[in-house]
Image (tube, rainbow, N blue to C red):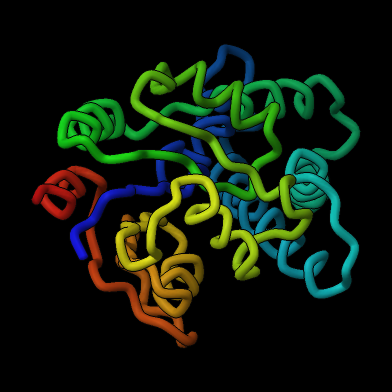
Length: 228
């Protein structure tokens, strides 16, 4: 079947998760933080993801905004920066308006011009996703923004991927699912989607059920995959 529906993960795929810490590090008077930001950003993202998996396994769901705050608190303490409430609030504010990767707006415009249905499918809470989409100015190129809060469990639970065919009334074989998370792309492929992994860092393939059909360096090649 031809591809009719193009679905994107949000954080790390459309939105640069390092942007919040990097922006703070570039602000005047943040010279000390600038020494810490790369490791803090990496730990923040790592703990954020770990907590989604662990909470899903524990049956202890909370929304992604709470997980994001918990991950940041761990990362701040690991860097000896806990207790700086102003820094914490600044980082969280910026996380709600992350920069999109530069190729995102033209890529989405091109995919929509092909007549594709487009949407985000994300662990993100609805409010934070709405803020990110508005800040990036990409809402006009999306038919929907789907959050796991509708099913109460994080990816890669299959009921999250079920949301796509339920929303767009399409066969799963018609869906191109795009993620920068190797584990997400593998799970989507195992589920039955055509999966594209945006491997921006040249990471090894995850040893998981399913294997992405496409491995890309960035999102600029997506329109070539969706054109009829």
